[in-house]
Image (cartoon, rainbow, N blue to C red; front, side, top):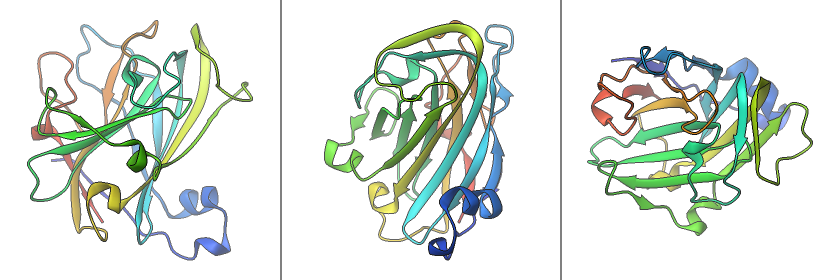
Length: 214
């Protein structure tokens, strides 16, 4: 099982968040091409992950072909856009959370035991998740776009309070995976941090989750 230690950021009042993540966050790479015959393309996707006393922080940096943003509201079909994803399973739970964001910061998030029994998180809960996004060369993404080709550099930072996961404090461990996908981009791709051993793309497979140590 792939593992990653998530460090605690402290004294954030003494530095800006980007500097804190750069110096104190744990680096990760989303570079496992699980289905190379059908989907060989993998954009550069890496980032840093950390936590505070009350939240989990995941900062993706992406550089790759295409930029698709068609979903401009939460609870849409973010995975069809240029998309980054975090799946998390709390110890002792049968279900898991999925958090999926496009470059506009529009978030699809739900909980359930499998792909077909997802219960979307409420707008109230989604409102507790901070999203910081940017796309190099664009002042903002506030209308649908679909650029095919070209190199696009973009960022998504999610700050997810542990209370969103139903926790009062940081757990000792979490299981999960970190993904990069783009189902309807000009170069469809399905790339992961921890390997997925299914015959075709399927991120909703907790048996392949790695482990995060907090």
